[in-house]
Image (tube, rainbow, N blue to C red; front, side, top):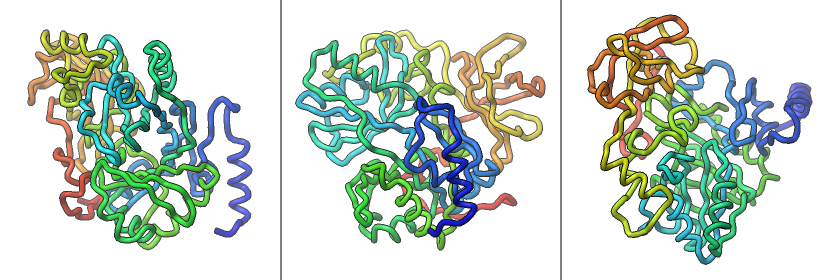
Length: 401
């Protein structure tokens, strides 16, 4: 890509932008500014693009063609050494005994009370080497502290790894244009090592969109700008746009956002994620005893979907909205958004278990006033995740239906 006057302006803006060196810029930062990123937020002590214009346009680009997202904020924690496999199992209640090299798994990291500290994707690179691809919390510190206390023979560090997400129905065609037909054989939640014109990568069939997608883990940050431009160039014939993770599509898919829908005060059973906890396996893990007690006694609250009446929400919620039934408080909305595809206001909420029956009518207190809502199943769209897993064909949709 040739430098232009606008590129020089974008570079100047990117160099001036920031709050100091304590918040890190990704290897793709300058590229995202050059391609139109207008706003950023902070995630895992790094800047993440949040605005390329209209969130609704970003959603339609995702579900109809493809978007490229800078998600270097998914910082990796590498765990290696003779005790690595034992140590990783100690961090999570998901049974890893059959996990193979080249496989990825969505896992929950819990504390001693069973609360969720993070919900990363775990990648097994070797029998003695793993990556945790993090959501928004300091698991590097947690894991380092556990390793010191447990006196295990492991090395824990942050490697030079920076993920991009290429997501959407055209992502497979773009990846074939870049890597050839071999990439189409990569299975859902598996990964391989690749090189693109000398750029070292690990590529997985994963993503945070509930759509067909790939994550490209760059293994040398010096190539960040070059990698971004190569992908964007290859994607132009397929309608690729720069984008950001879509809150609309996330909520449609019932996907958690850490600190919003989950935190150390919520446990897997409250979030309908009991399948990710094996309390019968022989291996021990942090929080196992507490989670056994929680399972035996049952949870007092649980996550549900809500359809909220009223005019379309103009933006996602920025506070937790109280939920009530017959005048009494029963919980809170954790994530809410208007879905232009479903033409409904949809939300994830934590409510009292006794009030979680499908069809139950509740009231949500929003900044616009009290609105009627109804408990509905989650996910709101494609509940079998057939789009993300690639088990169904995709028809393009429009804002007009």
